Image (cartoon, one colour):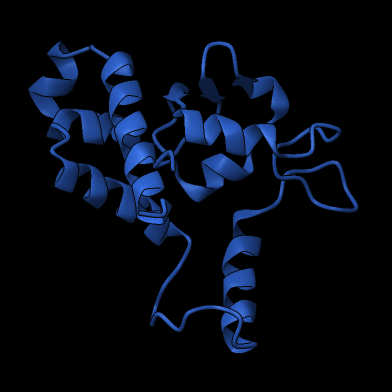
Length: 156
């Protein structure tokens, strides 16, 4: 729903979430730069449905630690092995990120906004001179993505 890396999502604490500002603050990213992720109304509703008595949005059951990215992959394998998941060959949780980016492109999202949503760093001259974070644009396009996802499940 956000296009974040699974490891970034796993590490989110409730202190990183600002529902009034409709953002998540990512402290640790692959690029090493912290950043804000804009939230659609659908993402906010999903977050509101989570257990707020824990320190982390997705916390281990017996320890006050966030779930590990490795757990998601292992759980995927277990679900597939037990016949509880669609049998999509080579599917991994990272494919959700790929789906967001591809879906945004299909909806007409400008490339620079799609890359900002994923948290990709700008390379070369672009990275040197274009310091715009595209926060407003990211919010607009993530809302369009959330609305598109809703349209897939809306009864007609």
